Length: 221
Image (cartoon, rainbow, N blue to C red):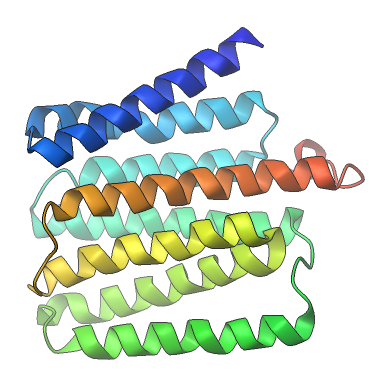
């Protein structure tokens, strides 16, 4: 039991280091702490019996985190692709290990809300995005929205909140690419919402395992 606690403490330390570094503008702290976040969370989840798909999704998140440390456009596209593969892993995870966590009628209402959020955001950003990024950002946004919706209806409110925060974090990135006005220290808000998103998705998956012992996640993975 000591190893999971050490990993969780190390993850918390990396989170604090990253967010404080962003808040005070200490770039080297962010550069060191950011690539540690998802491997530590993935290792902690694995020791709690998480399905392999969750671990793989987190590690593709790590790939995206590392690539987005660069401001170059090829690194941005590669990072977006890495996150996209992670979202595909999450969708497969929800299909294999989730359950109907939201009544069908309410799920339909949520679906309408997510579609409105997707189309509205892409429409508003479209003309301000660089021309060569418009289609990739739109496709990625659709995949991200599907992941967030799947987290809610298959894993419940905690994971659903994680998916919504993931959408918020990536929308903040997109508004920066579109050169929209940004809040003070935008990197802090991007990482704060992103870290919370990945942690809630992880907890939501592990929570489903505890609530549904007849669907063992390790065996299904």
